[in-house]
Amino acid sequence: MHKVELLSPAGNFEKLKIALAYGADAVYAGVSHFSLRIRSGKEFTYESFEEAINYTHSLGKKLYVTINGFPFNAQIALLEKHIERVAKMNPDAFIVAAPGVIKLAKRIAPHIPIHLSTQANVLSYLDAEVYYELGVSRIIAAREVSLKDLEQIKAKLPNLEIEIFVHGSMCFAYSGRCLISSLQSGRVSNRGSCANDCRFPYTLYAQNEESGTLFKIEESEEGTHIMNAKDLNLSAHVKDILDAGIIDSLKIEGRTKSAYYVGLTTKTYRQAIDDYYAHSFDATKYTKELDTTKNRGFSEGYLVNRPYEKQDTQNLQDSISEGTHQVIAQVNEDGKSCLCKDKISLHVSYELVLPRMGCEVVETSNTIGTIAQKEGSWTIMFNELKTESGKSYEEIHSGNTNAIVLPISLPAFTFLRAKI
Figure 1 (cartoon, one colour):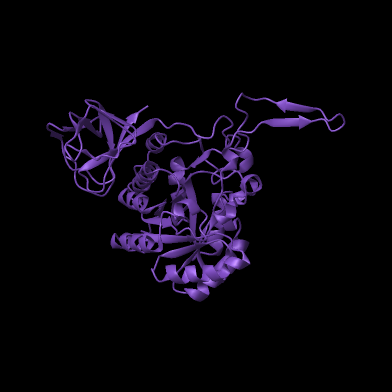
Figure 2: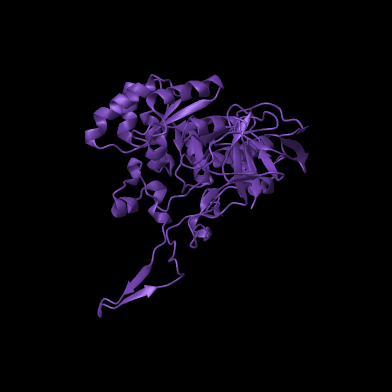
């Protein structure tokens, strides 16, 4: 049976490792040049990026390179060198948006598959066919397209792979074709430096053109988040999507989001996919888990609903909502210690969020602390907060960079969390 791929964001090397540890089949990442996430791309040098590709391949997983910016004439020579250099690292695909870049990549690196970025806005089999004839092996569908339309594309082009976004931030503009950031701050969205201006609160005014009178339209003291889209969450529809039998990859947005977000969303969608194939799909379980992440409120987007059928896709109150849980600490890669992310107190029980890869967890009780199972979840409680150098604390706060010794070794990148 051909199983759907789970594709997770890798904003830096650590997040790449976390995504793979929590169950991703593939990750997408890029060096800053020509990527639509310049901030996350700067986390990688060419040297560390090659190391990341090799690490991913060592686990039998795939890495797709984002080269999805829209270059100007003055950048083309640099783009050619960039494609040549990254191609030598043997990634599993290039993610490209511009037709000219597709043609360039096929000439320079014909052995690297091309995935068409969502920025290309493919909505119909007519456009899909054009890109397929250019040599694209997979399209990342526009977020405005419906599942029924994708079924028609697959029927016309059965050998063309289809990838869809299932979770993450939604853009106010049409598949990211936005000029608001460029207008207000000079940061060009489609060259990778969007300032997220749509998330800001705005004060609205109405002007009487005859008299010149200006009226302030008040909705709240803070103004109104009139352009603020809710986040996409299709976890409850994974069964519907996979039942269609035409989707090859489920993609999670979020290269600039937190390590916890990467791990938790990957783990949840991995569970949803595995449960589907095991005939034990339970939508409420995935929804509850994803509510633990910070979000702007959730929407099902447009894949399973037409735009006019959905009137709840905006959050007019605020740009970030708190999730149901707070991350307390993250276990280091050696598994022997953790770093505080909020506040760790003695004799307080914290839930463990475990990756799919790593050592087995066993119940333990010693002078450092206790590891136990409670209502189906693993928990940890510290009897002593001790650093690797032997210094003890009554309480640890975020900003303290001392690694705190664990009662036993835990899987790398395990998260400690508490309900808010």
